[in-house]
Amino acid sequence: MPTALTIAGSDSGGGAGLQADLKTFAAHGVHGVCAVTAVTAQNTVGVTAVEPVAPQFVVAQIEAVIADFEVRAVKTGMLARLEIVAAVCATLETLADVPVVVDPVMVATSGDRLLDDDAVDLVRTGLLPRARVVTPNWQEAEVLAQMPIASLQDARRAAVQIRSRGAGAVVITGGHLGEADAIDLLDDGDAVVELRGPHVESRSTHGTGCTFAAAVAAGLAQGQGLGDAVAGAKRYVEGAIRHATPLGHGNGPLNHFWRK
Image 1 (cartoon, rainbow, N blue to C red):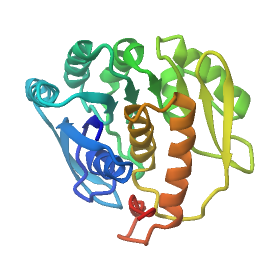
Image 2: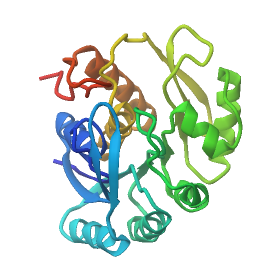
Image 3: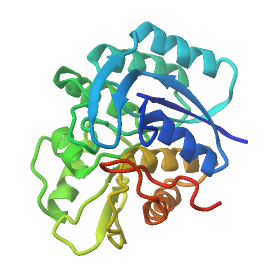
Image 4: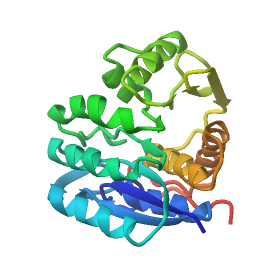
């Protein structure tokens, strides 16, 4: 069984962050290991408190798992602080041959900020060059590309800007982008692919970004090509939303095990 590592914050509601990542890995037949970057007091309604983990302890967690497991993919999520971003960037240099999926978590589904402003520049300059693929939603893509996105053409231009920071590929996820379908835009430098699917009307959308990126990482850990991993992740997330049972009073979690 291949192993994938998630470097992310926790979610006390269980619908997002490393909990969603580990569920997604398990649903794909991948063994998940983790390094916790922050502990959040969070539910389906919002985030009430964030306690970042000391950067040296984040590094210690990563070093512990890579010393014992053959990690075949890494997924980063909520990194919270500049010092944690810097520590993760430095530690990933020891995993130069392992594909890294960067989920540039900045804002929770509820709208709460999850990344300090001064850390965003280091994500652009330090973390993106290490990414096999970066998976921003369109709001995060606006921040990374430093431009507004109001259409598919804007998204294409933003993807080029993000790739120019050194990322191997970009998937801009979520939203209509002026179209009737739900569209994820994949730009790998050779081609731009529009991955279209139906919008699923549901309030069970907490953790969709984490789940998508983790599903891509699981596919890469299993040796899939990037295009297949991204397409499979889109189908998986759509099914996880469609089969979710409403939980909580806000945006509830997905059903990560809908295929069982």
